[in-house]
Image 1 (tube, helix red, strand yellow):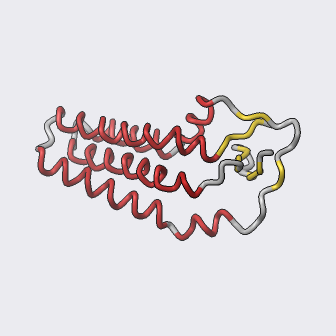
Image 2 (cartoon, rainbow, N blue to C red):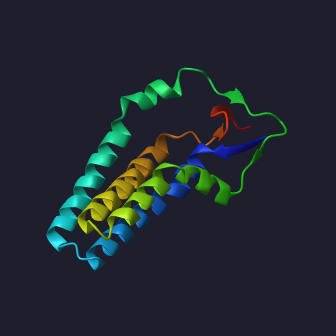
Length: 148
């Protein structure tokens, strides 16, 4: 069984999301978005997404009240790149695909989507201190285990 550290995944994906968000803002500006509207769209997307993602009451409900089981003795941790890839699907990759589609016809929308990506990164970074370092998830079943 291969597990993914919840804290490590968050630490890996947060800067990627923020960097992609800034990249999409730059690409939007290069594609012709005016500075003012692009910055407002980016800022609004980042703020609203960070607020909603961090304060989402469903997150508490979805976690459940079950105590994590001890990780099986044969369990191993996935390499960092597999954990990063798993953390980026579907949200990070999906937002970047939408920004790529939007950049030519609507560069300001691409800037907004860059803000969404950055906001996801900020929400993830803020949540890292609350994630117990011993918690790991099995990606297919989403079962949470406690590492020894």
